[in-house]
Image (cartoon, rainbow, N blue to C red):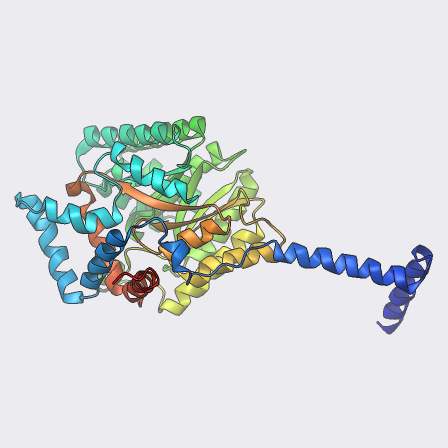
Length: 451
């Protein structure tokens, strides 16, 4: 060790003498220049602060901020949220005249509009601040029959064609429950859990065991998915496949990986959503990357923490099986951040979307890129937050030059009610989320001298 160090020092001295006509003067200049370039390289990365409310809310008027403050104050009352999440869906089904109230409050905060065309002004405003858009047609599994599923597929394709005409809509989101019967997904999932082997082996084996009429039904599901992904590939729009409940997730994963194997050979078109509030998803992410390497496709990975935690725990308790959910938030955070690090270590094979409202996780991704000397706008990394939440993350990332978007749902109020109810519950149950939103809004109103 000492001999190697001595030899290395000797070579450095020889090099200095060889290139330095005036010895140490040139050598000093050489290393000063090197250090200067290194310093400039490090300083080329902007400082990102999620406390900067000027950047966060630059796109909102004082009136809009005050309206958001009022809404988050309401969502900070758990009893009111519990009452509202029960009353709103019932009132819509009953035909009560509440749509105007919903539209002017929670709908306007979290949804882009009732129609695809109504999202245009929102997308335009976001684009002016270098924020992109992920369009989401807010249809969720209603088991409306084959005609309804065909219609949903047509709507997804319409979204893709529309997105292709816009300058800042690189992605759209789909739910497999929009194009497939929930009961069929559940049956396939149960069969896959009884079979052995890899995900794809269990999937193929389960398909073979289906009766003929359900094989045909599943064939139609695959055909709809293929049509959607083919159109997205043609128009260069990314398809983000939403995660579902654990008891239907396996066939969704298998279907999504099949689409990746077909459409992600050169660029990433299809992304799977991986929920790290499940204790098995970090290993699933790693296994998915191995499959991508073996099959030579790019793994699209949208990393989230999760959206069905309370429902999952309740069902596990009712049916007496081990909960698929992490034992605590710290475990979920640990696996999420490990997932981000894994993806960034494999950016040659993985296209990552950091879909998170956790400030540390978002900042971690930027730091890992800096550590590897990679640009913040690397083509295989993207950040995203939900429209109406965490503007301090979205707009500060955009200001720093990161590729970042808002997840922008749209659809008739009756169709997006389930989504809106989850947003209300999430802002009540996620530790500190409502308080953080309120504190930032109040800070910006105070900075503007507006109360």
